[in-house]
Length: 381
Length: 194
Image 1 (cartoon, rainbow over the protein chains, first blue to last red):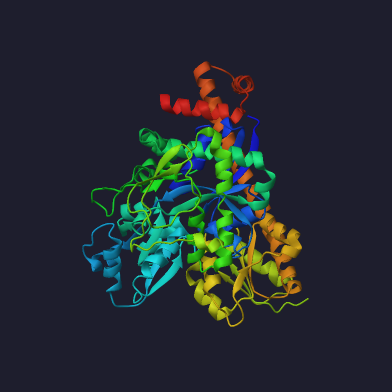
Image 2: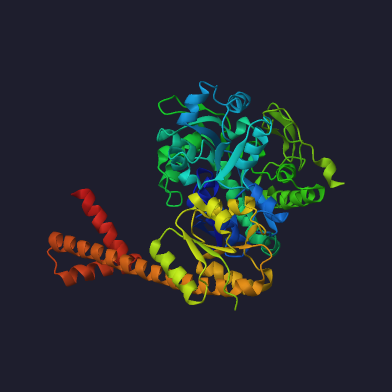
């Protein structure tokens, strides 16, 4: 095949699925793209390779393009978010020892888990996260700030080593993307207490990112890439495709994870502890439905705000979530688009119909565990 | 040239560590410390107070190192990833050689550059050696597979070794594949059928 070669970096986690399927199911080649997926050993390496031009595009943790665009994140660079690759998909768990100490807490009750953890005496709780500029870390900070007396120490652990870090006692708890939470459970070293969506019901987790300058000069390639990924995400979210998705992802050389490790995240059946029954978690990991891939500018603003950005930087952050490209590049493939590009984050308690390009669409609940809402509309003025 | 910098090398492979430390030592830097894993990194950084930390770009511990660099306020200034906008060639050379460097913020460029150049040269050689080793291993593996496939054809079809190879080569040419791919397919099929 002689398509346009596009080098795209990724980290082998279940939620890189849209990229893997865009390639393996031929959505990319249908768009005339020869999608070259290049595995990266760490988020910092991926960031450097993208920023310094060795990758055209990459899967990134949603806070990374925001952090880099406002001059943080280890390496400042103008990076755009073309679209959201996945919503939710992370888990919070504790070591077997801490689980025994905490006693029975209802799975998924963020407030109860926090109260129970905060009620303990002792040294600061060591919590493993994959990367400082991650949604994991932002959700952890947001959640624990509701219990000021709780002292935590953030420890960065590469996800594939999270179960080891728990087993060896380097961390007491962890916030990680699948399959590494399920791995800790399977190995009997950890117990899952809740999922990321128990803190924020609709958190942008991974995004498709590219250098701002490259985006500006590669209009057509960007368009093809976005369309291929959009089709893959849509395919992934169709219920009837889930078993096949698990099978393809499990076999893919790009992931090298067995099917039983891919299954929980893709089907949303999470097993909190070894030997327990799986719990069906609605929207555990979402790729397409409810405008999941739409890069809401208010999501960028929320991220920037929680990175401690000032008003000017929040505005800059909004600009790097490219709703304009999303609207322009996906309009003629019947992608439904919300009428607005910002929403009041946290305001939706239930599924809600809103105006869209094709009439109306259903947005999913996006509430926070503490009921707070974030309106960044004023920060434009 | 100033050689009184404190350099920390994070690398778990003992041979590689020796290589890098020796190369730096030969160029005049004696205050070099090596660390096998990042478990003790935070302590090492605050005790040793390195001016420069060198780590393989491919090392998965980089994210951990990076986080420590955000939170560690050494007596001097925070450590930051070295990217020099004014000397893009040096940054690209480091990336190509597979080395990343974290330096104390505000350190003079003329003091960093020679360290980086020495490290880049050494990493390049190590990378070259590694890819040669990988290529040699792969060639040996391919050879074994082709020999097995030849053996299968010789037994099943009563061919000579030469003819067995010619048959595989013809099949490969007809299908636009490599001989090794045909051999692999044959070996796999034979394993399934036996």
